[in-house]
Length: 266
Image (tube, rainbow, N blue to C red; front, side, top):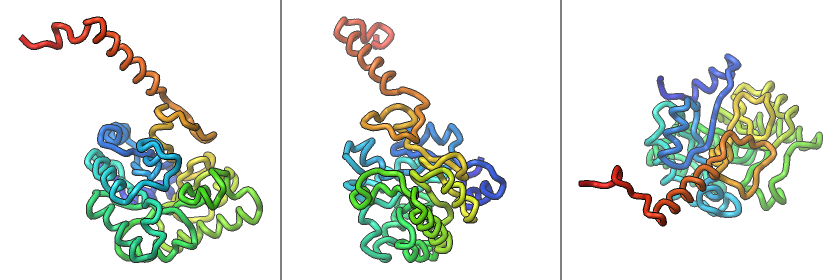
């Protein structure tokens, strides 16, 4: 199977085939997701919460994002790898944004980057795409703006707010983004945006009408319990499985049952 590209994203929208995306932050889980046939692996700044243990996505650094993206890129044989631009890696200006975005492709092996924002990053997207850096945009609930938004709240519920989000979607499309994440917006609005723009929409808490879906790996596998958003569906409970395995190991060591003869050398 050939590596998934930007053109495959656009083709899937044209052919009305759903795009599958999931976050990944290290080699083992990226390898599993790639083997499962996922189209794209997002090395999300969500690692700041689910891997590093912070309260929000703001503290993760550019160097840390590069480090994790390198691991994911080594594992991905078919899936597209997308690096997530962390807080303050692009807000300080277009020159900084392009330089940092380029690091994901040059140093970390990613094929594209993602950044949050609409019209305010239109210039960033235009300049990046001119520099041959594919850009996935992200509007709606943008976690890096958690303090401005007053928390993690559904966006676009009022008529004016919905109109603004549609305008933001058109702005990033016009700027050259190849795809757009819609996070935590009403499903009817997501449907309208999906129908009115030519690039694929990837939903997370945006209902079933988007061209694709993305979820955080640790939510899907039941490994993160601090909070579970309404839009998450757990497909496994690996925390309980891991807890059982480690407790059993502890018990066997304490009782002298491990290691046994089969785990020992002669």
